Image (cartoon, rainbow, N blue to C red; front, top):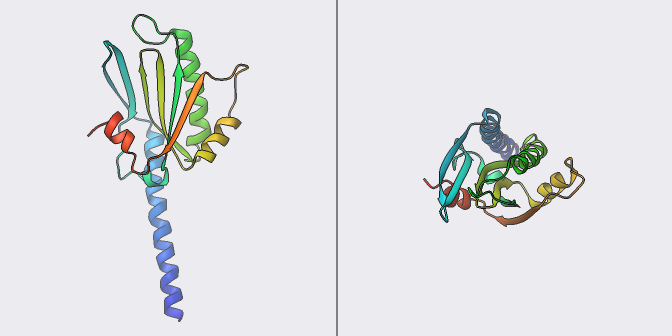
Length: 167
Protein backbone atom coordinates (compact mmCIF):
# COMPACT_ATOMS: atom_id res chain seq x y z
CA UNK A 1 0.00 0.00 0.00
CA UNK A 2 2.82 2.41 0.82
CA UNK A 3 4.39 1.83 -2.62
CA UNK A 4 1.15 2.73 -4.39
CA UNK A 5 0.82 5.96 -2.47
CA UNK A 6 4.46 6.84 -3.02
CA UNK A 7 4.22 5.96 -6.72
CA UNK A 8 1.04 8.05 -7.10
CA UNK A 9 2.74 10.96 -5.40
CA UNK A 10 5.73 10.72 -7.74
CA UNK A 11 3.42 10.50 -10.75
CA UNK A 12 1.55 13.64 -9.67
CA UNK A 13 4.79 15.52 -9.07
CA UNK A 14 6.11 14.45 -12.48
CA UNK A 15 2.91 15.51 -14.27
CA UNK A 16 2.91 18.82 -12.42
CA UNK A 17 6.57 19.43 -13.25
CA UNK A 18 5.94 18.66 -16.93
CA UNK A 19 3.00 21.10 -17.05
CA UNK A 20 5.09 23.77 -15.34
CA UNK A 21 7.89 23.32 -17.88
CA UNK A 22 5.41 23.66 -20.75
CA UNK A 23 4.06 26.85 -19.22
CA UNK A 24 7.64 28.13 -18.89
CA UNK A 25 8.03 27.64 -22.65
CA UNK A 26 4.90 29.70 -23.23
CA UNK A 27 6.04 32.35 -20.74
CA UNK A 28 9.39 32.59 -22.58
CA UNK A 29 7.61 33.06 -25.90
CA UNK A 30 5.48 35.85 -24.46
CA UNK A 31 8.40 37.51 -22.69
CA UNK A 32 10.60 37.44 -25.80
CA UNK A 33 7.70 39.11 -27.66
CA UNK A 34 8.99 38.15 -31.10
CA UNK A 35 6.57 38.83 -33.92
CA UNK A 36 6.67 38.22 -37.64
CA UNK A 37 4.71 40.16 -40.23
CA UNK A 38 3.24 38.76 -43.41
CA UNK A 39 1.86 41.11 -46.03
CA UNK A 40 -0.38 40.37 -48.96
CA UNK A 41 -3.68 41.41 -50.45
CA UNK A 42 -7.30 40.55 -49.74
CA UNK A 43 -9.95 41.72 -52.24
CA UNK A 44 -7.23 43.77 -53.94
CA UNK A 45 -6.49 45.68 -50.71
CA UNK A 46 -3.46 45.37 -48.43
CA UNK A 47 -3.50 42.62 -45.83
CA UNK A 48 -1.14 42.59 -42.88
CA UNK A 49 -0.84 39.65 -40.49
CA UNK A 50 1.29 40.05 -37.37
CA UNK A 51 1.84 36.81 -35.49
CA UNK A 52 4.00 35.30 -32.79
CA UNK A 53 6.47 33.31 -34.83
CA UNK A 54 7.72 31.11 -31.94
CA UNK A 55 4.31 29.57 -31.23
CA UNK A 56 4.22 25.92 -32.17
CA UNK A 57 2.06 22.94 -31.45
CA UNK A 58 4.54 22.10 -28.67
CA UNK A 59 4.16 25.46 -26.89
CA UNK A 60 1.79 24.33 -24.15
CA UNK A 61 -1.16 25.35 -26.27
CA UNK A 62 -3.38 22.67 -24.75
CA UNK A 63 -3.68 24.87 -21.66
CA UNK A 64 -5.45 27.51 -23.79
CA UNK A 65 -8.24 25.69 -25.67
CA UNK A 66 -10.59 28.64 -26.23
CA UNK A 67 -10.22 30.65 -29.43
CA UNK A 68 -11.35 34.25 -28.96
CA UNK A 69 -11.58 36.39 -32.09
CA UNK A 70 -12.07 40.11 -31.55
CA UNK A 71 -13.07 42.33 -34.47
CA UNK A 72 -12.72 46.11 -34.55
CA UNK A 73 -14.30 47.78 -37.59
CA UNK A 74 -12.80 51.08 -38.69
CA UNK A 75 -13.36 53.46 -41.59
CA UNK A 76 -10.69 52.44 -44.07
CA UNK A 77 -8.68 54.82 -46.19
CA UNK A 78 -8.42 54.01 -49.88
CA UNK A 79 -5.62 51.67 -48.87
CA UNK A 80 -7.91 49.66 -46.59
CA UNK A 81 -5.65 50.42 -43.61
CA UNK A 82 -6.74 52.36 -40.50
CA UNK A 83 -6.14 56.05 -39.91
CA UNK A 84 -3.51 57.16 -37.43
CA UNK A 85 -6.23 57.85 -34.82
CA UNK A 86 -7.81 54.43 -35.32
CA UNK A 87 -4.39 52.76 -35.14
CA UNK A 88 -3.62 54.51 -31.86
CA UNK A 89 -6.99 53.56 -30.35
CA UNK A 90 -6.53 49.93 -31.38
CA UNK A 91 -3.00 49.92 -29.96
CA UNK A 92 -4.25 51.17 -26.58
CA UNK A 93 -6.97 48.50 -26.56
CA UNK A 94 -4.51 45.74 -27.52
CA UNK A 95 -1.95 46.77 -24.90
CA UNK A 96 -4.59 46.85 -22.17
CA UNK A 97 -5.86 43.41 -23.09
CA UNK A 98 -2.32 42.02 -23.29
CA UNK A 99 -1.65 43.39 -19.79
CA UNK A 100 -4.91 41.88 -18.52
CA UNK A 101 -4.42 38.39 -19.98
CA UNK A 102 -0.77 37.66 -20.58
CA UNK A 103 0.57 38.72 -17.18
CA UNK A 104 -0.80 35.56 -15.57
CA UNK A 105 -0.82 33.51 -18.80
CA UNK A 106 -4.60 33.23 -18.81
CA UNK A 107 -4.54 34.29 -22.46
CA UNK A 108 -2.11 34.48 -25.36
CA UNK A 109 -2.35 36.93 -28.22
CA UNK A 110 -1.37 34.79 -31.20
CA UNK A 111 -2.00 37.20 -34.09
CA UNK A 112 -3.50 40.45 -35.32
CA UNK A 113 -4.88 40.70 -38.85
CA UNK A 114 -5.58 44.07 -40.49
CA UNK A 115 -7.30 44.58 -43.83
CA UNK A 116 -10.14 46.38 -45.58
CA UNK A 117 -11.75 48.15 -42.64
CA UNK A 118 -11.22 45.76 -39.77
CA UNK A 119 -8.64 44.36 -37.41
CA UNK A 120 -8.99 40.88 -35.97
CA UNK A 121 -7.11 39.82 -32.86
CA UNK A 122 -6.63 36.08 -32.44
CA UNK A 123 -6.45 35.10 -28.77
CA UNK A 124 -6.26 31.72 -27.10
CA UNK A 125 -7.43 31.60 -23.49
CA UNK A 126 -7.84 29.16 -20.65
CA UNK A 127 -11.60 29.85 -20.65
CA UNK A 128 -14.17 32.27 -22.03
CA UNK A 129 -15.12 33.20 -18.46
CA UNK A 130 -11.56 34.30 -17.62
CA UNK A 131 -11.39 36.25 -20.88
CA UNK A 132 -14.71 38.03 -20.21
CA UNK A 133 -13.69 38.90 -16.66
CA UNK A 134 -10.32 40.27 -17.80
CA UNK A 135 -11.96 42.34 -20.55
CA UNK A 136 -14.50 43.70 -18.07
CA UNK A 137 -11.86 44.58 -15.45
CA UNK A 138 -9.28 46.22 -17.72
CA UNK A 139 -9.21 50.03 -18.10
CA UNK A 140 -11.95 51.31 -20.38
CA UNK A 141 -12.58 54.43 -22.43
CA UNK A 142 -15.58 56.68 -21.88
CA UNK A 143 -17.23 55.11 -24.94
CA UNK A 144 -17.44 51.33 -25.33
CA UNK A 145 -14.83 49.77 -27.57
CA UNK A 146 -16.27 49.19 -31.08
CA UNK A 147 -15.62 45.46 -30.99
CA UNK A 148 -17.37 42.21 -31.74
CA UNK A 149 -16.23 39.00 -30.11
CA UNK A 150 -16.53 35.39 -31.22
CA UNK A 151 -15.48 32.44 -29.09
CA UNK A 152 -15.19 28.75 -29.83
CA UNK A 153 -13.36 25.70 -28.65
CA UNK A 154 -10.13 25.16 -30.60
CA UNK A 155 -7.86 23.05 -28.35
CA UNK A 156 -5.45 22.17 -31.17
CA UNK A 157 -5.23 25.82 -32.35
CA UNK A 158 -6.42 24.73 -35.79
CA UNK A 159 -7.50 28.26 -36.74
CA UNK A 160 -4.06 29.68 -35.99
CA UNK A 161 -2.04 26.90 -37.60
CA UNK A 162 -4.24 26.39 -40.68
CA UNK A 163 -5.73 29.84 -41.40
CA UNK A 164 -3.45 32.45 -39.85
CA UNK A 165 -0.05 30.78 -40.05
CA UNK A 166 -0.19 27.74 -42.29
CA UNK A 167 2.90 25.59 -42.09
